[in-house]
Length: 459
Image 1 (cartoon, rainbow, N blue to C red):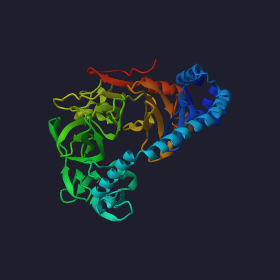
Image 2: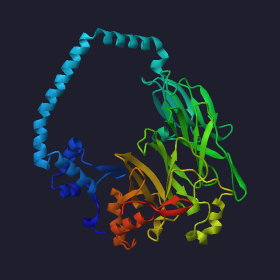
Image 3: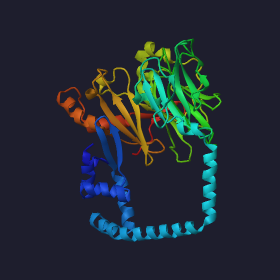
């Protein structure tokens, strides 16, 4: 697959060359005319990319509006700016004048402000706003930095960079105070919990999680610790608390949903680690879905991406048996075959299958990270690591999905583009980067009707 034959363009310079314009014009068109560019970030900075078909469609739409390429567009924009400014100023003056005369509107506004002021007391102005960590504890402070209360989040010291991953803040009961849902740790029981705190630090409730599911007739039970916590709104706008739990002994994870009273509504068991989850409205219906990324140990640590509905979920992630390609590892993998599994009702479950390449980087598992969801595009990072704790030795690829999670294409991240050629030159990798992108794209599978199918991506 040559770069010229690709349907994708990587980097602003390549995009500018395709559009026959300067780099500065690309940025200007993106800002003023919504040029369809996409960005994904990694440790080395941002990767900018675009789809040629998207660019061609965008140019066609411009031509249909009698807007052409750089010079004419620029002239059109310059001429239209004074007209737009005059129009906006006129509307502003008309509205300002009208509101000034409309005493009824002003009076109602003043009345609302007065009632709000009467409703609030001094505690409203010092409610929880700032959160920092100190060792194993979270320090809760007011907007002015005044200490309010604290709680223990973890067994060991935790940094500020992980704080907002393990907690969520929202005024869920509309009383002008923010409640806090968070992971906590109890020294006496040596247990991790999900807790809901009131604005003043009062613990409303705490919950652990458990499962009666057995593997090789061994019950997993409640030996799970809490990870990511997020508030969410269901289809009827009822607040929910979504939490991620990992087993302390086995590579198993649970995604759980509680209501504000602490009742467990749903739970979903993934046979492997879930690194994280995000809440995105994939189908643009006003209700967010739960998108999770992790590994599946029954698939020998392959990467997976799943989607659950906020309206309800249950069961166990697929597959429910050892796949033929891993039959030689049956003794090792058999501990992850569930007894009497209840099939999960996930909206999607995607597998990033290991290939014959990059064996040095696939010794244990493939890490999947959710990067972003913007303009109907979901960016997911696949990380290969040889576990030497050297970030310069990792390989990172971005898988680009549309709203339906059909795979559009795979692109290398910035660090990989720099590091990969060196590995090829040294003979440590025996496949060109462009060919490897094709291989990675061809090894993305969906679980459907009890078996794996090719991802229905663009042909």
